[in-house]
Length: 94
Image 1 (tube, helix red, strand yellow):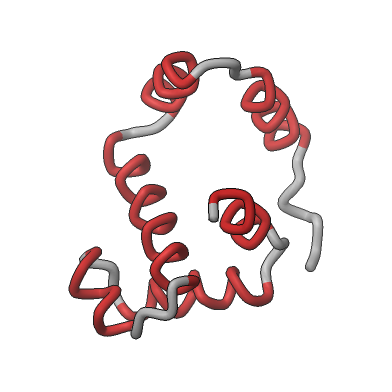
Image 2 (image 1 turned 120 degrees about the vertical axis):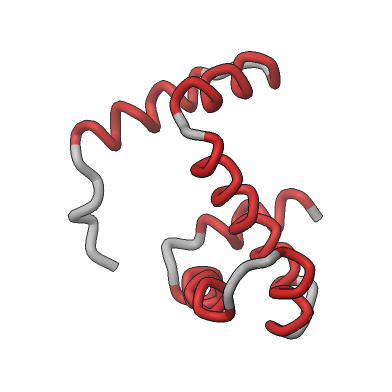
């Protein structure tokens, strides 16, 4: 995959995320950084990734999460052919 998304601002963001030490600090930072819709969207994507990894069918995932099948398809693509981020965290949390 292309690394053109790794701008200095993105790298700076990742740098500060790595410095977060507690759940409270992480929650406060992300709540200040993101809108409620952005947080909900990210949470939905994470739920979809977990359900895909669990073998659920797209229709079931859509019904449970409210995500469109197009969104589920994109997440499945990233899960299987992305940077490996979903896989790494799914493996750590199982």
